[in-house]
Image (cartoon, rainbow, N blue to C red; front, side):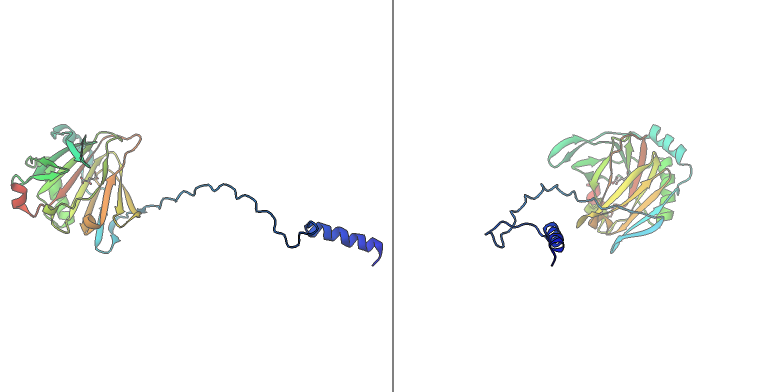
Length: 248
Ligand SMILES: O=C(O)CCC(=O)C(=O)O
């Protein structure tokens, strides 16, 4: 090999092969310190959107969503906001007494009482405004209801935390129908056995949402806080089946 070629080859070799120190055969390069690991945030799973009609959340757990199914929602909202005797109750959550972050009212047939979060609710009779909504909902849900819990969310700070309406007095697979009036709010469901499984729906004026089957035993639902929003009323119709227990 000519000296010119040799020096070219040497130059090439020196470019591609890292130089090793003499006498340090097969020495391993000192390990570079690993860059500090940035903790990976688990991406929250996207909630599935409830569509109009029947939605199966999981086996035996069904939710029916019917948008704008109650006529005249604006007038009904104004009537109920004015006429209902809204109360902000003290409840017990994990042993602590707190004020509920919304106002409520409870209406039922035949003096049926309902206790939740250790608060006993004495029923009012159904006024005509609520009886009329109840008749429409019963036709749509093909079910009969004998009590109704009403929620008044005064603004976006008022909310309803994760819960299910799984009290014994409603029976094992209760059909629960809810009517929304006033401001639009998100309604979110999450599965008890895997909190990453979620469904959501933005409930607007006159919308009806019916939960059926094992939805109350296998899923929880909530109305999360919002930074700014107007007042909303929700009426949740249920059927007390253990009437004797409820009347005592
Ligand atoms: O406000 C709503 O849409 C939900 C009400 C509810 O979940 C309840 O009263 O148990």
